[in-house]
Image (cartoon, rainbow, N blue to C red):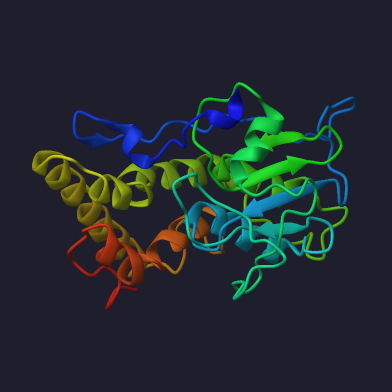
Amino acid sequence: MSASKPHKAAMDDVVKGRFVRKPSAFRHKISSEPGARFAPEPNRYRLYVSLACPWAHRCLITRALKGLDEILPVTVVHHYMGSEGWRFVTKDEENIPERCEPEPLFGFKKIRELYFHAEPEYDGRFTVPVLWDTKHNTIVNNESSEIIVMLNGLFNDYAKNPHINLYPDTMQEQINEVAESFYNSFNNGVYRCGFAKTQEAYNEAFSELFGRLDILEEHLSKSRYLVGNSLTLADIRLFVTLIRFDAVYVLHFKNEQEAHHGLP
């Protein structure tokens, strides 16, 4: 039954001409509390990502900075999203992109199969990143903003760089506030421009997008970081979109104004 379900494309999230991103469906948390279903353990979890995806890029950066590469394996899907969503490469195909590999746990061909394995009646979009639990064979979480918080703070016993804290307790409220302030207008704003189906929706998204860039430019002309005097998750959440702006979004998503040349 589930195998016949159609792929949910970005166009499915368009409401009255406006792109409205639907919330991620799997929102479980890894916890150090006694008896927690998802406990922080080395090599128990696997991260599924696409190197083309900015949301997955957040997780890869956090994983690298914390030094979790030896206890949190990663599987990279093919960079091209087909009609049925992200797919895994196969061992016998030619010209396999760098870092891509076949799905190692079940031999699945597409990321959607992971979703149906976790929830046979799943009816949402098949996105990355996916944080997979090999103990319970299910998806823990597919919301990047929550995954990076877990990677930052819950695996310090196994991390190479436990001293790096990208989400300090005393700054969490401010980090959340700043990151949310540019999420809809900038991180999601490039998609709101690209997937807009009316001129009014496009103009609205475009205005908010470049208005937010002006605000960010003013702030970063005075400070190297978005919050405080060190790198935080807010900076990572901004960087993954900004680094793709001129190379990807201007060309593909109709953001017809270059963003970061000349910006701090």
